[in-house]
Length: 439
Image (cartoon, rainbow, N blue to C red; front, side):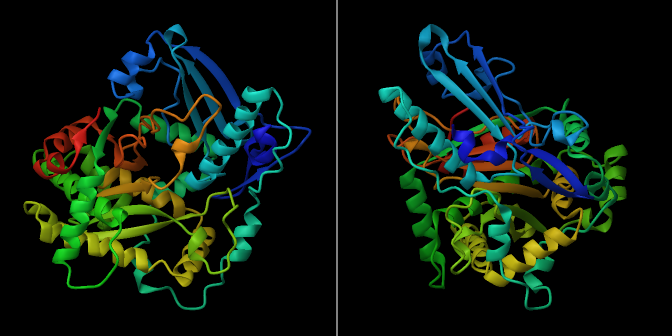
């Protein structure tokens, strides 16, 4: 029933030109999401004692990939993959839901989960799903295209820093089908020692960090939780990366590949780049996009001087990086949005450039902030979740901010990366001072 309100999840991908996809929903040829159930050998108490570490889930419960998979024919790719893991002795369930980023972003995912829970809760209560009304969610991308203004100026200077140069690999990935592309990326990292770690930053610590930034700032700019968290993770992660890079020799095949595919853009970078997904729904005046469930995220880039990040962390350094985040956030104007989407739709390999760059360039990370989403009001009829978080996507340099359970407060930081980098994070003096290791 929830799929009826989100029909795009039963659609089929079609590659219409290099790097461009469309989703076709044919009522006579639906692509029904994959749905599986698995029995776990552990009970809820053991899972809770491990802080809900997804590594304890049985093999097959989660599909650790950041990319579309399902064969070489894009029309066979499932756009949604759902798995229910039943814990031992009827102790509860773990719901694993994976939806293609091509059709929803975090906001749209949250809309879908709430609608699904609303329907299920009604069925649990009285075995009917009447009187629920019609979902307001809309997935037609034409609504977004109508809301986004036409670029009025030459390319903004701030966007030049966002555009990663095209490369042989990015053009190749734009040319091949989504299934082949996913297989290639998965193969690249299949045997890499990539895992996921979770850290908790308390509400009290967040407030202290914000006050420190405000005290050391000479401006009257509003400083948000996101500004502080982005600054903190940038400093700790950059220090961990730089320490790791200094302990190894960057020569041989890996160095040659890096130079060959990325050229001069990968040589001796002066800045550490933190890329964050920015939702444009509330940033377009009179856009009326609050019910749009498709992907409306664009990239925001924060460039922090490596020279600043190499020194021991201080309140002054935190302030400087946080102000850089705030400046980048404030630059996401209607014109910035218009030009970003125009470039993404006109350059066939635009969306693949950061993925290639991220693979070979150490001084970079990607962040998605989901901490404002109402995951803990999603009630399927048996109460709210005890824990919500991502699984190991088997792709490095990805970070997610998730809300913690209401009884705990604060924010969970989930970092997907090579194990040796995560080990550096766990021993970074600044990071261990402001966060607690969860798993």
